[in-house]
Amino acid sequence: EDDAPRDCSAKRQRSDAKAPLTLPVTPSRYDAPFPFYRRPAQLGHFSLDAQRCYHGDARRLRYYAPPPVEGPSPGFDLRDGYRDRYVKQDETVREGLEHLLRWITQNRKQLQTEDKGRPLNADFVTWRGHLTKVLTTPYENQDGWLLAVSLFRGTLYISEVETEAARRQREQRTDLLKELMYMGYKFEQYMCSDTPDGTPDPTGVVNTNEAFCIVIRTRLGTHSLLFSGEVDCTDPRSPWPDPPSCYVELKTSKVMHSPAQRKSFYRHKMIKWWAQSFLPGVSRIVAGYRGPDGSIVELETFETMKIFQLIREDPGCWKPAVCMNFCAAFLGFVKKVVTEDNPKLVHLFAWEPGHPVSFTVHRDSEHTFLPDWYVEVLSN
Ligand code: 0WD
Ligand code: CA
Image 1 (tube, rainbow, N blue to C red):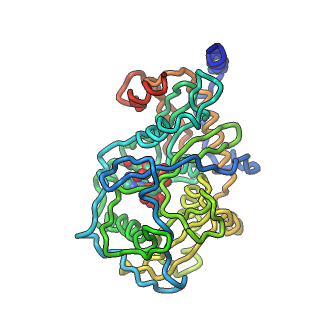
Image 2: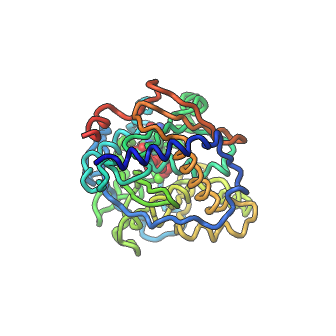
Image 3: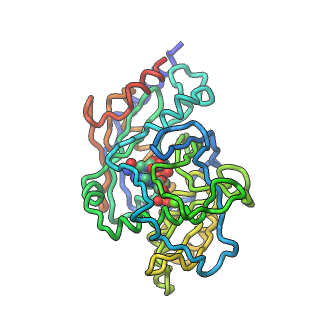
């Protein structure tokens, strides 16, 4: 009965002969109509607790609870608790796709297809954050990336590998930057409650081990995608009450004083905010603007679907269609290059600003990332 998958991989191998070795990244190459992107559907969720342990439930889901009136000076002190009420996730632990793979094994039935050789009904499995990096690549001129890919039973798994530069930056992070990172999490605590009608408790501890993640299925062009992303909170009073549009993404940014500052914010920061929320269909982003003393001076809500209208007036700005067309091209490139179904084989796709995307091949190396337990469960 498993003639079909073998046939399919044979076809893929034949086209391999013509597989290109690099993929260009120049925005003008991808300046075409917006590609097909199916409305993202939420398949499920999971939580990571204060010890970073997985639970297949919504125990870490929080509720959007903004201060009474949106306007100036909600009076949040984002530095509060940095020294004495902060538990930081251990960043030296490389989790890879682990939590998402666990969710997949526990929800196999709803992901199955007729095809016995292909246990998951998806071309790609990855974290949302990895796709965000791909989307913003045509406009990125600072940070490169490394994405490891393995083809296993008909599905391509994409898992990020930390670059040397990113590791150095992480290890040499200044105190100022560490505090800024804390302030983003503190803002979430000021804006979220643990119950739908509750009020935030800013006296509590900020623990970055905790997370609520949703699992999304969608399609970009010819590529079906299954990915997971962490969401900050759901709005019980959302104008779009169904998941995933009910979620609200919380962000902080430096308060702006001039049109030039706002223009630069739209060009360089908004692209990341847009890509991150657009991918899973999160409909709103709430920005808290920080004053120099670390207090929030103003809140602003952005509707994800209206961001392209804000940037359209600036001809030098990024284009959502370029981001999506590049992502579709990258996924197509990966499909062409990675054709051998083998969980121990890793193609490492690398990109540095100013260069095209290239790749290297690693057999049975330290880059292998699909865990044995996962390979075993999906082989049966
Ligand atoms: O170990 C790592 N270096 C990474 C871990 C890198 C990227 C993600 N992750 C983890 C996250 O902690 C999360 O549990 O994977 C899970 C899902 O990630 P995602 O949603 O695909 O990632 P992304 O969209 O990049 O980030 C979403 C949120 C961030 O919110 P902001 O507002 O900063 O974009 O996940 C959190 C963060 O709150 N987050 C992290 N939390 C702790 N440690 C990290 C990290 N390294 N990266 C992102
Ligand atoms: Ca956030």
